[in-house]
Length: 304
Image 1 (tube, rainbow, N blue to C red):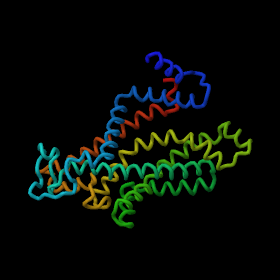
Image 2 (cartoon, rainbow, N blue to C red):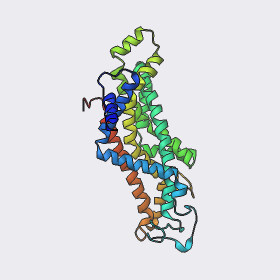
Image 3 (cartoon, rainbow, N blue to C red):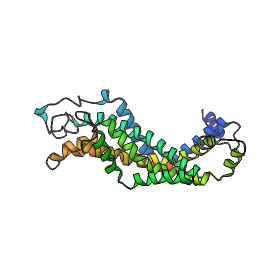
Image 4 (cartoon, rainbow, N blue to C red):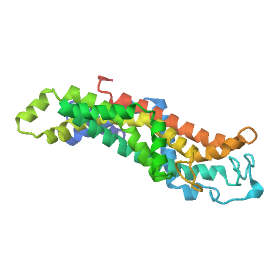
């Protein structure tokens, strides 16, 4: 067993890979070794895995019905029956936090998929084309960056109407400009490279150069930026829910739960504190994960 593991390790760490598959697997393995040495990053990864498992198995992990009201048990403190207490309508807070993880992951996951794609497209097109195309796209980006993201998202949701779908759309629309700036900066350093000139001499079109050569080199920095921005996206989504512009009652959502508990925060602190703690832990986990990914994907890390 040990001999087999050693052979696999030597094969993955070979300085002269024989196939493209071996080279890719070796790069993944080396990246995992760097990532796993960062204990805080591993802690963030474990927390996020637990979050995904919680969201996936919410119907089985939830101790009670998150929407069942029992006014006789309203504002009960944490106990053996209700581990995190109950809210103003007698609903179990732990169950609502578990189900709220689904809503939070849906919002964050959708925004994290849409916004970087928009930013990557806008930024790489602007940096590669240059000239008037660059000026128009970057001035548009500057307009979005001139407004605080949450304020702009509130304006969009107010115009479109409250709801989880409109909240996702508003956050995606307001989150892409930083990715566009990052992609443009990466493109400006790549477009004059020798391999781009060689591909152009071979007859590669602009779109082929953009999609086949420039986009793959921008993805690593995008991944790191997305991981580090997840905490901000969670806070923005919670902010919309707190203002009543995100997920609508009775849907469980952490920001809306904090809003429900703000009236009782002095006497019944657990109603707002428990979902707030959930937001804090998940946001911290994403930041720790982002730091670990930066160590792995940073092209300047050398031979560490």
